[in-house]
Length: 151
Image (cartoon, rainbow, N blue to C red; front, side):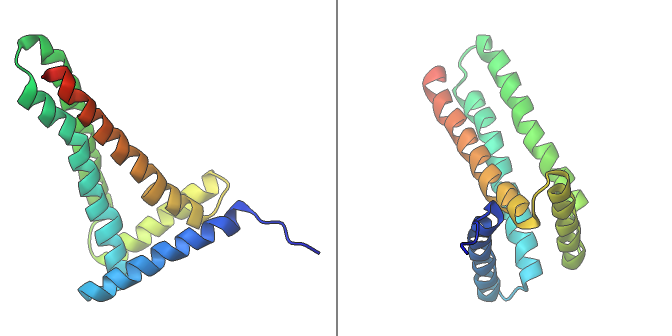
């Protein structure tokens, strides 16, 4: 009898690839899996996302020649501030030591998986890969679109 393929089965391959990537990265930098997971998934990805969220504000400030654009600058200042605020809250929530930060993150992802009626692996992929890439691309598109508006 043929086994039915479920979304969970499909998600295990990219999740496994991500785990292997983190293990290799950890080995390269002399960090355990828990340490590299916190450094890469929380700190590095969070910092990159925050910088990409602040970029529209920086572009608006640097290219805005008139006070008429003050509303745009204000909107993008709020947008950038939201990213900074969220990053600081995340750093505070997932504070060191590494084991604590990792275990708390796993607990939070498991809680979300239960709420979303899915698995830990799918929630992990959605947050650290899919949502991350969507927000990063969105921020970069906003930034690129701002340049002709202010020139």
